[in-house]
View 1: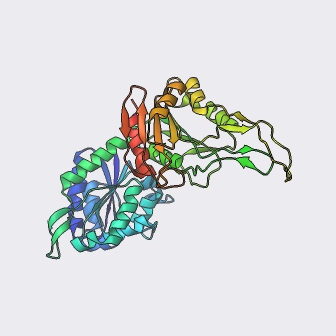
View 2: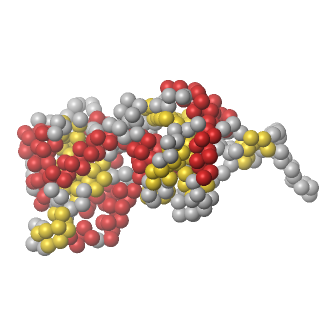
View 3: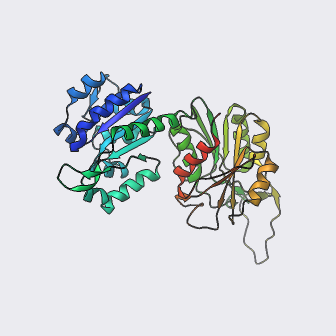
Length: 392
């Protein structure tokens, strides 16, 4: 297992040497990246001698000539740790600022991120810093909270770097999770479908694709070997490491997903597929008139039920967006479609679900179990969902 340890400019930087050593005792290959400020407290020579690996500082350093180190290290790592993490470094990562090797590397990484802050207690409780921390946690970062006690400036409060055993335990837990889907292929349907009325108009829904993108990112963080997404038209950005097929209609989504389904270990039907389509599509553009317009609609195929049929060895999970917290309809869908589990969310709550960055899922299993993800970012809900489904 490979760990990138980022060290930023805190007095606690000297403790990163103990952290690196303990991670190595646990079997990790540790590569260290220092900020300029960290070099005021510790040196490149210290970590290179300790780990037997190159230690990076400058953005343009290339231990292997012709290879961009921030990309290689980000891709090769199983876990990225920033410890100690200063307020400055946390804020930059949260806001997408990559102005040194460490922040650039973190931004290039899709692997789990573990942050162990260390700073003055007043800085730690500052609302701006706490907001930056919340942003990173919403994106799936894990935080080992600082301990209470005397800090370097002489004040007392919560701000001391957490104990080395606590950080190592969190790292090992993250590394274990990052292997959960190792070797697995995950297929995700995402976004809305569009069912054409004519060459201009269509029937669709409010799905943004955000939940599908979150499930894809979660699958990658949990170590999936291959993530495939079949998506209707959505403005969301899907992870670059995923293989994406763009479709429009339910028929097109089914065709693409069915081709990938037999090779999949997990199939997650996040897409909000239109239940009906026009029986007749008008070529050109329907013209306005004073007379009422009647549309005859016919059912679309049940995509997730068909995928469960053609991939009987896969764990197939559906989504049920319902205007109620009652799980009766979700349970009926689960049985009728022959699914492993179904994730229900209450779309009558406008603070979650469609177009929101938040969600709350009740995952109902075929054996009767119910797993609650709790309310949080869609990525955190996706991680909770995949961890509940498991990979065994």
